[in-house]
Image (cartoon, rainbow, N blue to C red; front, side, top):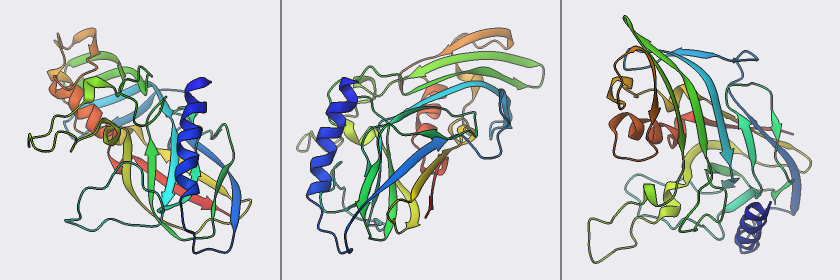
Length: 260
């Protein structure tokens, strides 16, 4: 697909700038899936922090790319750019669309490549185009299910995109580019401790339970709770929708593992 081709061209240039301390270049396979403990076939059932019993029937996630890098940011560190030349240890520059309710691993479109260096941070890129694109209409997350609290039963469905609807303005007029859109598309820093090896395998697990942890479904438009179905707005203007979006970008929802 064209958008993945462009993403790959863009990201490969970043890796080429890296100054490896390892002993050579490697290639590896990569895959992604939902939680290991999930059952095959929906729903994925959990309780959230707002007191809802959630039965999630659909959670399709589009991943644009994944990166492992050698640095772990310290508390109080200055803001970093979205792309980190010289930092990347490994990369998979063409993504995958996964069923986040299924434990069955889905292979990424291309082989990953990297170096024999220790990585301390993982990144998941939630995009269907270039990470710095001013517009991207890709459906990053599609969800559907129902939430129950007491006698209230509410069906819900929604789509999350990360485009101008997520653009954040800078509080300082002197630094209008302080909150670039690309930052909204990168989930980081995901804590890891991985040293890639040639012909190894990188596994990414995602957990939708984290995404919905703080969602108060009663805040959704027309959420009466009498069995009706309501749409989660694709914007930051609704409290429940914003909670879901923030949950999607929480590092707690993503886990990397390496198999030699």
